[in-house]
Structures are given as structure tokens and as C-alpha cells.
Amino acid sequence: MTMRVFERLVVGALQCNCYLVGDPVTLQGIVIDPGDDPDAILAAAERHGLSLVAAVATHAHFDHILAADAIRQRTGIPFYLHALDVPILALNQEAGRLFLGTDLPPSPEVDRTYAEGDELVAGSMRLGVIHTPGHSPGSVSLVAPDEAVFSGDTLFYASVGRTDLPGGDTAEELASIRERLFPLGDLPVFPGHGPPTTIGQEQVSNPFVGSGGGLWTP
Ligand SMILES: [Zn+2]
Ligand SMILES: [Zn+2]
Image (tube, rainbow, N blue to C red; front, top):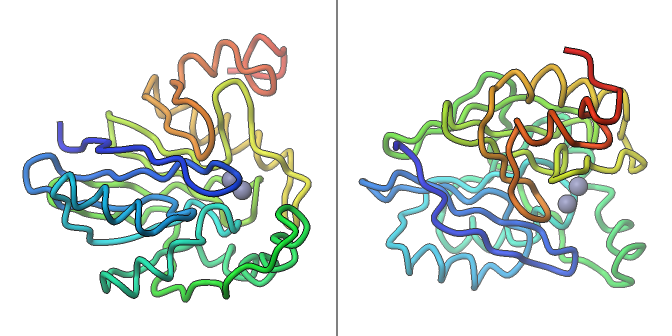
């Protein structure tokens, strides 16, 4: 084991899964999807003895990034986002008013953009970046080889992410799932919302992409 999921925190009004992952030996870690409640995220990291090296978002929707600025300011760690989702940040104010009926804080500054093939390193943990567009243009999944995949809002337990938001594309999302995620093999999947699942389970029974729905062709 070169990585561990130290904690899943369910944060914010839309109940985003924020994951604290890292190297179980060196205790260097990464925050995936700091969606809200920076106090709780940083307190959990401290409780586990994790020394954070980066905060990353699977995509730019506000429910995945609201705590990013507070975390980068308090810890000095860089915040990563895919370049194709940087323009989506500008739409979050409107989305906040639409979904929450409230004004959101300003969008976080993006310290670094990441892209297909990049690798995030924390101790001996390596998270590969896979571009899985469809839910948003710059949606990514993060893969710890042979161990786990963090699928953002692309693939959920028995469901897939909505594609009716700006830049969404259903065909692209299904292709991302079938051509990029399913070939990873039967790994545990930690999605952006809801319970964990596995690639194998979703291949067989996901009603949107699984063979049970008649849509999936190997
Ligand atoms: Zn989303
Ligand atoms: Zn979300």
C-alpha cells in the first residue's frame, strides 16, 4: 500500500465528498475536492498527522472548490485545476444564486493547472491525472495505480454526473467512463458525491453505462 484514504468528509450544501489521501508512512497528503468547511478539512488533516502538499479539484463547480482559497492561504499549498475548467469558475456566482439562492465568496486563485498524464506526488503516493470530460470540459479523475480512482462527478455509485450544466456533454461523459475509467480494471471508486463503488460493479450494473443498460460494448 502506497496510499491510504485517511478520511472522507461530506462538506457543503450539496454534500460533496472531500477526500484526504496520502502516504501512510510519511504522512504527506493531498486534499481532493475541498468543497466547503476548511476548518473541518484542516482539523481532520491535523488529527491524522497529515502534512498537506497540495489541494486539487476534480472540476470547477462551486461545491468542489469553496474551501480551496482558505486552505491555500492558511497552509501555503498550491491549488490545482484543469485548464479547461478555469473559465467555469467564472460561472460559479450565478450557479450559487441558482442552486443555493445566495452569493458565494470569490472564486479561488488557481496556482497550477494540471492535465492528462500529470502526476501528483505525496511521499510514495502517486496520483495520475486522467482527463475525463463530459460533466464539465476540464473534469479529471485521479488514479492511484492498482489502488483507487477518484472520479469526481463523472462516475457515481449506480449513476453518472449531470451534463446539463455549461460545457457539459453526455456523449463525452459516457466515452470518458467507458474508454478511460473502465479500462483501469476493478479498482475501488471514490466519487464526488455519495457512497464508494468499484469499476467492476459499475461495469455490470450502472444503468447509464453498464452492460445492464445495454449501452456498454466492450
Ligand atoms: Zn460538478
Ligand atoms: Zn459536485
